[in-house]
Length: 276
Length: 240
Picture 1 (tube, rainbow over the protein chains, first blue to last red):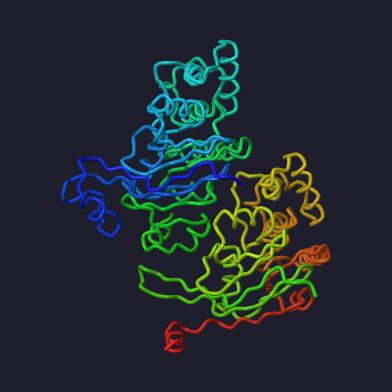
Picture 2: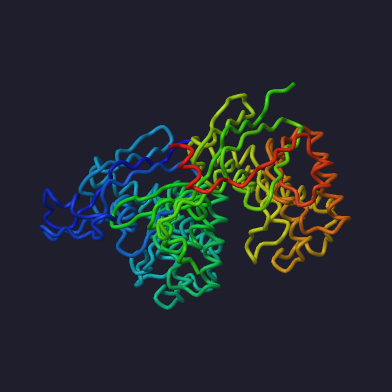
């Protein structure tokens, strides 16, 4: 098994920052807001490895920084510190040392992202098929017929009705929008996929089918995934390993069944004990 | 004599519960070996830590003390108590199986897929994996009409057979069994016992907890008796 992503010391501070920010925030300080300068330490010193074909869970409550982790890795936001290396076959990319053009290239060709809010992942003013075509165009596929065929295949795979290929996603249900987002993210068959609370707010039955779909895709394509969620059920269903975050810090990491059955950190014990 | 596949030395597990500010001992100073083609049975009263030992080996529990030396298919020895998460996941996929007391599965997954799951994980093509699952389920006389539905509605005995079939299907080198015959009627229990004998004959090493002393007598090559761990206060006194 080979490593696909290595993250070391990833940090992101919103605000001016001061020498006390790190010491004055975190789980012990019980806040992520620096009392000296008012900056928010969204994440600090986050490190983990991801292996090919593996699903890693990032769990924690709102404000724990879990979304910031994937947003920095997908170049939605720049980190204020830390490194990440993406291993792509024989090539290694130092993610945060790349210029903007190279970052965009990786984003469009080798990474995929599915956001909790479909607004962020989809263009609501163009059709479902057009959304996928857009991503395929960015990845250099130029033949109209080929693009349309590929878009249809992807939407069929994610169980979107083909009769709705030409409809605008803003007229879709929430579950359907997530399916289009997943189809779009998979368009270029990326080896690495980020999923940020993708089933939060959906009906239970819709959640289940989307999660099943993600698992099937993972087994078919061996896509490595980082799954961000506050939902222990999602963690249990999808992931083999997980990291637990609180106030921007990783407080525990382990095999998923071990974290759920033998949590060591006081916060994780509380989190697991509060499962429904 | 063949060298042991598994050698547990002084295993201990103590849960630290932060909310209640308590240290709960679950197993203490457990040592034994398991060999290829043999079955080691753990016996002892409730609370002696039998399941805790199995979970510690599978790393569902992080061991608090001791070494769990495992010799893998390549002949390398590693301490499961300290192995990396990826090493453990890889061993779970290829070499170490666990049949737990209760079957955990999705209420929407057909039985055939539940059983074939470990083969999917190894990259076996789905039709072949399902065929092997079907063969195993008919060997365990689970009626064919049940194969396409989820085990969620099954009786305890039917469910347990599905659980066992999933544990057996990938032919693990080391199989951990937690009361596999507990909820079975005598005829089905007999069928499971035969299967276990068959696996032993093929060289699978097994560590098992059985509900009935009779089953232990029939299947075990070694019996390890566990005593409940001493209370924390007693342990502290011992150290002092």
